[in-house]
Structure formats: structure tokens, C-alpha cells
Length: 255
Image 1 (cartoon, helix red, strand yellow):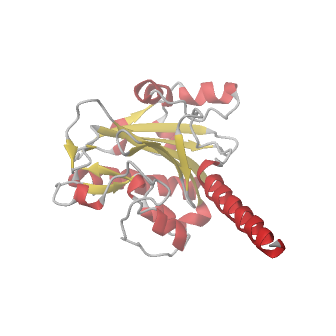
Image 2: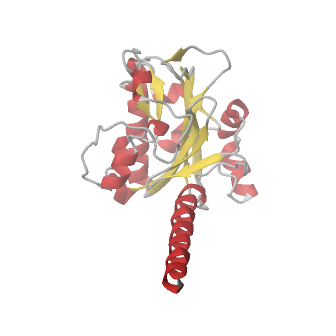
């Protein structure tokens, strides 16, 4: 009986730490500049290369955020291309069938090419929680150009902080049995927090093909905050945050 009680205690302790480990994986949020202000009610999930805030009603991320460093851009890991549901979202998740024959790409929010520094980061970038329905010409055109430009900025500035996500409206068209909404547009905000030229820039691009340069879609961070109702880079000192968010300087970024 004594050994049985010991085994029960060990089993219960093992179960507790296993559960606690899973919870900490889901709920411990890095105190990083790229993470927007959020409430305790939001479902925040963090993976190896990025964090996201998940909207269970839309079955899409509200935002995906991560830091991209110069060293990470030099990674050599190949694309995984193994799309699958996020194992940390056990309910209200999109399904691969939702995208099948929909006519829309499973478009990355955190690009796979930004995760080539780690096998695990690359694999996790293909979770459906990191995907949104994207027009093919958008995903493979103007959006790809913006992603490539952000990687160039990470190289030039040693590191950048990125937050990106969809713009959604009630009553939008949907795809699949889970009725995944088709975003009307996507936003991306980028911060260079290196001295002496701390700067930030944002973009809002309609979910359709475009032959315009990415500079045509540049906006101030303040403008995008009004559109998204999010507070970006709220961990910055107020004097810096106010200065870099109120205007947009495309020339500062070489555009």
C-alpha cells in the first residue's frame, strides 16, 4: 500500500508538471518590442519563431509578431511545405479542407523564408494558425515583395521587429466548412530599434494583385493603429513611440 501511494503521488506530480509545461508554452509571452498590447482574455500562442493572438470566432490570427535578426536571415533550412493545424489550438481551428479548391492560397503571416534558421521554426511556420486566405496574385506578388524587403531591412539594420495580420469585417466572404473569412487587406508594421536612427513604418495592402511599388501602401503606425484598433510597440518609451508612430518616412527606409 505504501508503494502504491508513492506511485499515485508521482503520477499526479508528473501529470501536474506535464500540464504546467503545456500551459507555460501557451501562456508565457516574451516581453518583446514586437508584441502588441493585449488583454488577459486574448488567446496568445507562442512558437519557436513567432507569437500570435488567435481569434476563435474567425479561426484566424489577429496578429503574428516576431523579431528577425541578420543572423536568422542567413539560415539555410529548406521549406517544410507541411501545412497542418496548430497543435496548441485544440478547438475552433481552420482545417486543410477549408483551403482545398477554394481558389485562395494558404498565405503565411510570418513567412517561411524568415524561419529558415531553425528546423522547428520552419515546421511551425506552416501551422494553419499562421495562415490566411490570400489571393494568389497578392500572395505571390506584392506581398512577397514586401516580405523580401523586410528581410533586406533585417540585414541592413541587424534586426527588425515585425507585427502583421489580416483586416477583417463582419459579413466578409468565407471559404470552407469552417467559414474562414477572406481578409479584405493585410497590414504589416516594422520597427528598427537600433541607434541612432530608430524608425518605424507600416503598410496596408488590399488582398489582390498590384503592380504598384510597396511604397505606395506605406502608412504611419498611428494610421494603422486606428484601422486595426491595436497598440503597436507599446513597450517603447513614450517619447520615442510618439515620435516614430505619428509620421511615415519612406526615404528613411530606402524606398
